[in-house]
Each structure stands twice: as C-alpha cells, then as structure tokens.
Image (cartoon, rainbow, N blue to C red; front, side, top):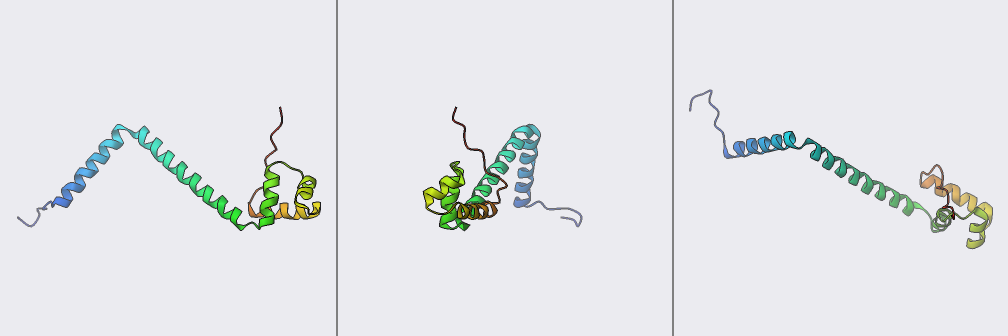
Amino acid sequence: MTRGENKATGGDIALMEREARLRSILETAPDAILTSVRAAIATRSVAGADAEIAARIADLTPRERDVMRELVAGHPNKIIAHRLDISPRTVELHRARVMEKMQAASLPSPPSSA
C-alpha cells in the first residue's frame, strides 16, 4: 500500500454501513421518526413530572397531606377543619404550606354536580 492510500478496516466498513442505513431511514420516513421522537420526549417529560410531583408530596407533613386530600376533594376550609378536628385558621396555614411546597398557584375547581 502506498503512502496516500487508506485502508478500510472491518469496523470502518460496519460504521459506513450503519451510517448509510440511518441516512436511508431518515430520507424515507422523516415524519414517522419525528413522531417517535416527540412521543419519547413526551413520555420522558410525563415520567419526570410524575417523579417531581411525588417528591413534592413526600416533602409534605402527614397533616399537610391530610389537608391536601381534603382540598383536592373540593372541601372548604371550615369542613376540613371540622373533619380533621383543627381550627379553620390552622387549615389556612396548612393550605398555604401545601400550595407553596407543591408549587401550585391555585387549586382546580371542584367538579360541579350536574
């Protein structure tokens, strides 16, 4: 072999074949690939969000979790206070801490009974 020649090894040929297959796939099915990539990103985003929410919930005290459960069920502070045998002011304090720890700006509206 002379000085300017390149010798292709088995690994080089395999790499070139993989690149050619990838190029072929990209040229023939860009929409399918884009859809798959978007789905993978969405799945990872949801999984990451679920883990983040679970971590926030784990950071709540047991009483804050009790209050959060009642809030999510749509109960007003006075009803929560009565159910948990605490004062309405204590419910307000727990509610504020829950909102802060959960990084929630507001609670969803309770479902309407139609």
